[in-house]
Image 1 (cartoon, helix red, strand yellow):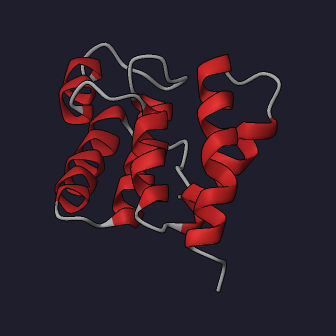
Image 2 (cartoon, rainbow, N blue to C red):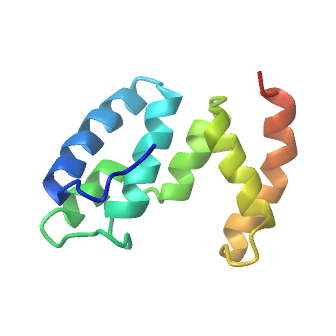
Image 3 (cartoon, one colour):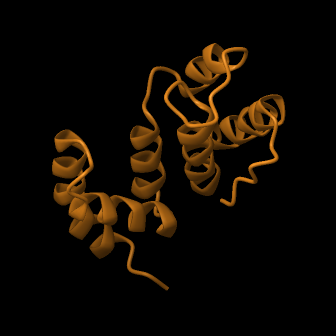
Length: 115
């Protein structure tokens, strides 16, 4: 998902609401795209805005962006699987993210081989 810098916090939140609804219906791409927006506009994102942070937290339902990426990966989304595998090799990723990614990468790739 290409997140244009020109998205206002309100525009991003509106798109986040749409994606969250789709993700709730099992759309793996929407879950991944939601995670990407969450990393940019959520509580710790570089484009976070005080006026929208609380709603981002509610939309995420207490889950981190990594949790949303894993949800998408476990549903077979290839960009999400690639992200999980990159986290496994990232020395700057938090230890728990790296460990979960290492454990899941090969399994996800085997279950959902690239097409």
